[in-house]
Image (cartoon, rainbow, N blue to C red; front, side, top):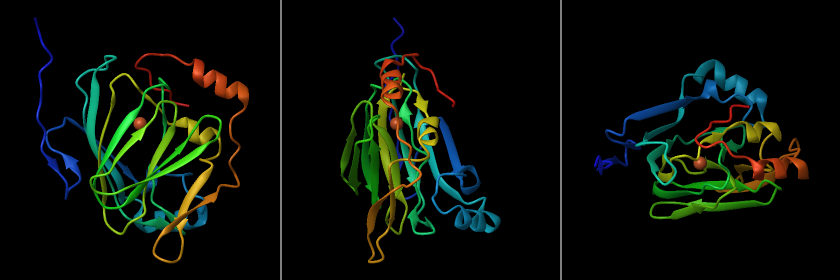
Length: 215
Ligand SMILES: [Fe+2]
């Protein structure tokens, strides 16, 4: 019998990465067009800081089998575009009923979540905080602190990611901005279109094991 091999990984909390994990990807400011409300502020920053790495992910993907797990570490830089804090692109899982667990290691951030029919939840995450992202929730993380925000995450290996879901509704319903007093507040996104009942039903009916939905 060929058993799947147990593994051990060192997490470098200061560097915000999982050592020897196998895969790493980085998102630079220039990769994040259209995410922020203030397009002019984004364009102005792009000229001088387009190469800045906003967040990076190291993860271990043993397989894409249902029942297996992908485990990794994500690190996001502190910063804002206009008054809006740095955030990840965000997604819902391609197999939409797959959940995810995050565990805060360093810094101060939020998990911004939205259900297919537009309910919203925000969970604050700091060191030693666990955040359970339930099945079906669109999720994105936001760094609301002044240092790197680092989390460990774990999700079913066949989940896949639909990165287009947020784009299709012109952003998430809420944006996270500086409250002017050293903290954050959420504001409504006026461009948000939401999803029709038919869209929601189509999402719930969606299958495609291991698939990645591009658009
Ligand atoms: Fe996820």
